[in-house]
Image 1 (cartoon, rainbow, N blue to C red):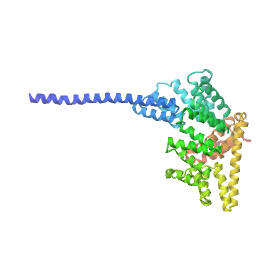
Image 2: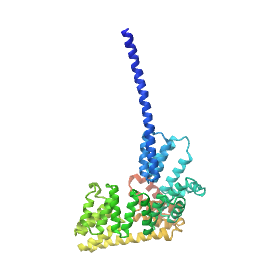
Image 3: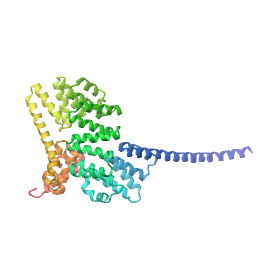
Image 4: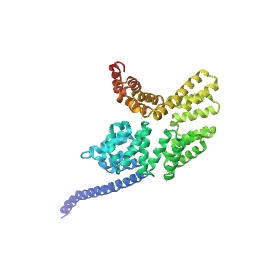
Length: 430
């Protein structure tokens, strides 16, 4: 009898473990369901407030519970694109494509919107146009992507049209108002930009990125006290904000408050002290305190990282003059004059001769060269390639792109080789 009981007991053990396993699996499935749903709700709330980086974080968390969800990958790709994270958007959309049986219209649209924002707007516009002609729920999404795309390539006229229509459809859309503010800053209409950024912050005071841009715009208009107040609010909302910390320090510098500026910078991690913006502020502090050699060192380092920094150039001239080094001062004065000239030409090309740009390879190439000299490399590449789309044999554009890709080293040898071959085989007269 004892042996029989023992045998029955032994048989019950694996059954118990099996039942426990089923229970554990069931609990995990329940937890996974509620975990995914929680993060999806949080992502929807963040998207409603157009906090796309936050939405992406929540969707990434949801994917830990549902890694095989094509729908969540699609939503994550959209959030990443709207947050400006194009590489993450590509990864999520590729995952979605692999999980879907066939490609849905929604996925295809999202892929076209991503290509538009990455600078391929001409190639995909014909696929997006139907969403503009036949107004529907996706129309604002398309208009948003086109606004980003046209602002990226400095087609301000087209960006303005998209913004106007978008705001007709959604007058209180925060992202639309914010993008219109950015449009106004690029058009040098600072008062209109300031009004738009203030409106954004009336709706969502916690939108830090908009407050930073507002502070930068106020500072450009020499409204340093107002700018400093905005940077202070940024730091109250996010004490670790790099832009807020450096921005506030630069406001102190503009008001000759050297000690306050230094104290502000000292709260940054040491690995941030070689950032060009920090180097510029450190140079200004040293200049203000009469340490001109140290100032020049910091300002030159800032210029090495950002050759189009006209303020760093201007203060380099002043420091060399105070040291009696007229030769170096003259060199940086020439650089400053070139930056000023390029900035004026950029405004002229993107505003005054904008109608001629799409059909003139020489103007496209010139705009690309100006962008390169001003350190706006991505726009420079776009406009040089635009020149070659109009005239595939246009030598100056190939030369500029060859120089650019050679500067990137072995990783860009394929692109450099292409332009090298094009230059070697181009017809006479090109």
